[in-house]
Image 1: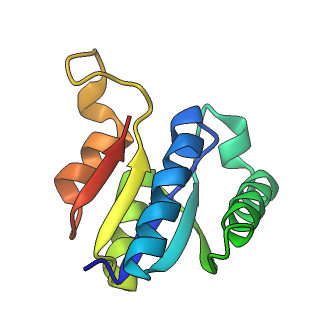
Image 2: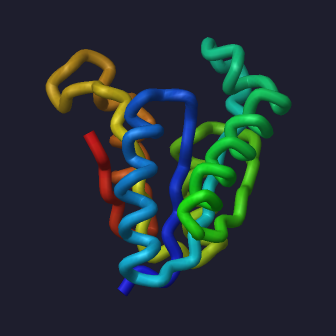
Length: 131
């Protein structure tokens, strides 16, 4: 059902926790896995604004999946995370985006500006948000 799964990652706990579900889905559906990290221009999170830090993040994620016998492709892009995630999903023909929530409640201040909410609104495919 899900031929290609896009897994956008950052340094959040929620992103790490979503990895287990991604592994299960990829194995169950025999999906192609694409791990994406976005180097964000002007980010307050200096680590996510560093190309070297993002490279290390992708390398670690790839190793995690490799230990479970899952071959993953890694993609690094620069830009605004929500728009970049949706662009990559469209380019790669993703059937599903799986991403961790950053813990922002749907009623919290700033929730309308969260990356997760923007991806849900703009995505060319279904989005599974892992709390």
